[in-house]
Each structure stands twice: as structure tokens, then as C-alpha cells.
Amino acid sequence: MNCPKCLNSLSPFNFESDLFFDRCDFCKGMWLEKGELAKTMGEKEDFPEPERAKSGPKSSQKCPKCLNVNMIEVALSPKGKLILDTCPQCSGVWLDSKELVKIQKVLRDIRIETKKKKIGSL
Ligand SMILES: [Zn+2]
Ligand SMILES: [Zn+2]
Image (tube, rainbow, N blue to C red; front, side, top):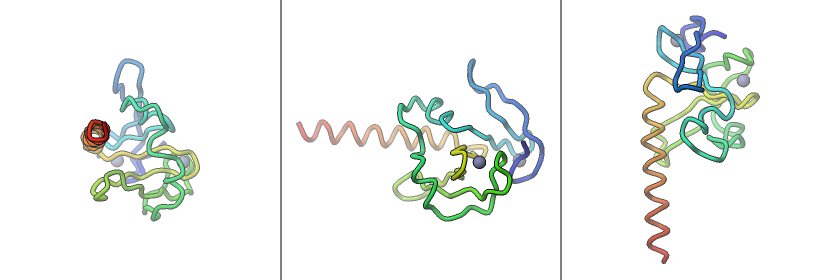
């Protein structure tokens, strides 16, 4: 597979003991197969939701796996600051170099919000 941005070929990157991602050595972007992002973030549900990857605006980048399929931009945070390129066909996700850290932060905020709501409703 090649990087959708710089077309450099991706090399395996050992993220955690049992998790390998395809990474671009040049821009440090990473390709995560369907389900891998959820696993990385400790989410039980598939993430981002596969349906959302079907209706968003088209990204200018093509899926490194499906080649001729344009990825879809899925807004992750409510304010839409964090946008992920997701493939509508294979549900893989392309992450830019710092996006993994940003996702972790957004998810943490969402979890805190959900907790607050639960406490508030008691
Ligand atoms: Zn690249
Ligand atoms: Zn794809």
C-alpha cells in the first residue's frame, strides 16, 4: 500500500505489542484497518461508526487499499475540529501524524461528558 498523501510506500509500524499499523515514514501518517482504531482506543463498538463513513463529504484522498475509492470525511468531535478520512468501502481509517493523540483526547472528553450526564440524572 502507498500513502494517500505522498504516495510513498507504507511500512509496518509496531504501535503496541499486538498492533501493527501501516505507516508512511515520510509524513508519519498511518493506515488502520476496520476495527483497529476501536481496538487501539479501547472502544467496544466499531469506531467511527461505519454508517457515518458513507454519508460525509468526499475527501480528496483515495483509500490506499481500495485505490480508486475516495475516502469520506467523518467529523469526530461535535465542533468538527477533528476530521478523519474513512473509506466507505473497507471502513479503514487514514490518520495524519498527530491525529491518534487528538482522537484519544476527544474520546476522553466524550467519556467525561457521558459520566457527568449519568451522575446528573441520578
Ligand atoms: Zn505520507
Ligand atoms: Zn478502502
